[in-house]
Every structure is written in C-alpha cells, then in structure tokens.
Image (cartoon, rainbow, N blue to C red; front, side):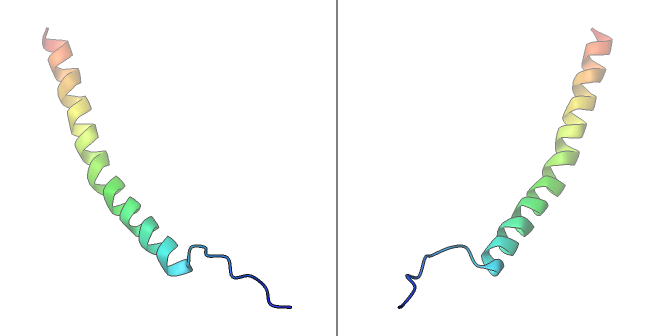
Length: 46
C-alpha cells in the first residue's frame, strides 16, 4: 500500500510568493496614492 505522491506547493514556495506579493504591494500603493492625489489636484484646478 504505497500512497501516490501528489505534487503540491511547498511551504518555502508559498513563502516566496507571499514575499514577492508583499514587496509589489509596498511599491505600488504609494505610487497609486500619488497618482490619485495628482488627479484630484488636476480636477480641482479645472
């Protein structure tokens, strides 16, 4: 009785993906925030 080995994600792979997503969010949130502020300023001046 040998169990078939199903291939899944390892803990290390999941941690790497979470770390990459965290870095992307940390970079993109300030950029999006600045873009929204600029759009708001442009809308107020129009």
